[in-house]
Amino acid sequence: MPAKKRCQLQSEPRCNQAVLRLVGQCPHCRLEFCGTHRMPEHHECQNLESCRQQAFEKNKAKLESERTVASKMAMA
Image (cartoon, rainbow, N blue to C red; front, side):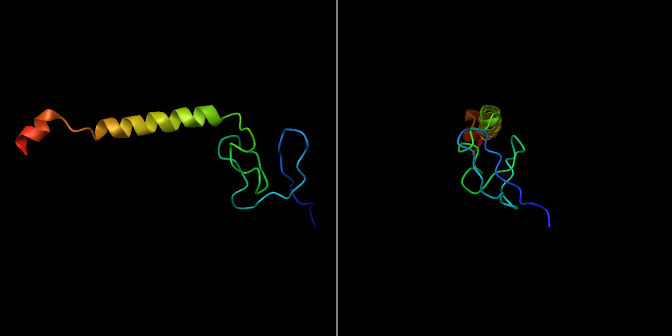
């Protein structure tokens, strides 16, 4: 039987907990973490800032596409 994968937390002290199979992989840095460190904020993810910027740009584009324009209001 292969050894269990362990949390890949980069800081000290090292975490020795087992990796979660379904939700343990970070979608931003692709490292695997235990239940305690699986969130990007908890393992100090290096790609967290770029993720936030992408989400900001996506939300901005969505809000701008849904903006009410005065000409639409006049026809209603």
